Image (cartoon, rainbow, N blue to C red; front, top):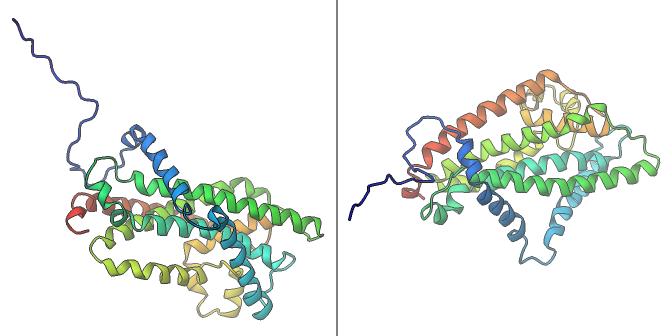
Amino acid sequence: MNNKNTPNEWLFELTPKNKFFTLNLKEVWQYRDLLFLFVKRDIVTVYKQTVLGPLWYLIQPLFTSITFTIIFNNVAGINTGTVPPFLFNLAGITVWNYFTACLTGTSDTFKANAAIFGKVYFPRIITPISVVISNLIKFGIQFLIFIVFYIFYYFQGAPLSVNILVLFFPILIIIMGVLGLGLGMLISAMVTKYRDFSYLIGFGIQLLMYLSAVMYPMELIKEKLPKYGWIVEYNPLAYVIETARYMLLDVGSISILGLCFTLGVTVVVFFISLLVFNRTEKNFIDTV
């Protein structure tokens, strides 16, 4: 009896990652079914055992917009021009919520998925990417609410108009998602060694919101507080919020230089976070 030795044909070959930088999109595509499962998990399970369920997607931006309108517009007297203050705030909050959802959702990647990471192999970056995609669906729901109120105020006689540059609005959302993904992966790598760092995330996001021109025009902070206006000017998120309102409501201004600065910061942060993320995933299981 002759036994012929035939080479084993493997579908996948798992080897240590020796490269300093790697973004294996081909491998991510091979695990696309798992990516879709993670996206479905993020959408279905978050509010599965809550009373209001997906309605929280709508309640949060509406109540926040109402609060900002009362405090910043009615009490503090911030002028939004011809645009209704509620709609002005809702536009900024809708875009801002997508960034914060991506940041907070990816900042706990290693700690929240330690049990899965320790048992089975798959490209670890799939987990934070799934968070960004699932939050994109949530953003779509909240953006529909903005459109509903836009139509309502329009038929109420408010002088509203959309700038032609709104065609580039999806690019702004991509920038916010990538920036949130990058910062989130960077924080998730730090949380594996410094657990108490995760407690500062909520406070940091609240502070960053006030420095990102979410509830006021950028020109206002330059006019009222010229000594501290540079803090907002060097905040890449402020340019995204301001540009989003310019596209959606045709108010404020758009800074090409500011957007180029934002894009540069986004690219640098993403690649640095990817380097740290790849380095951390090799030995995180010993520290989590």
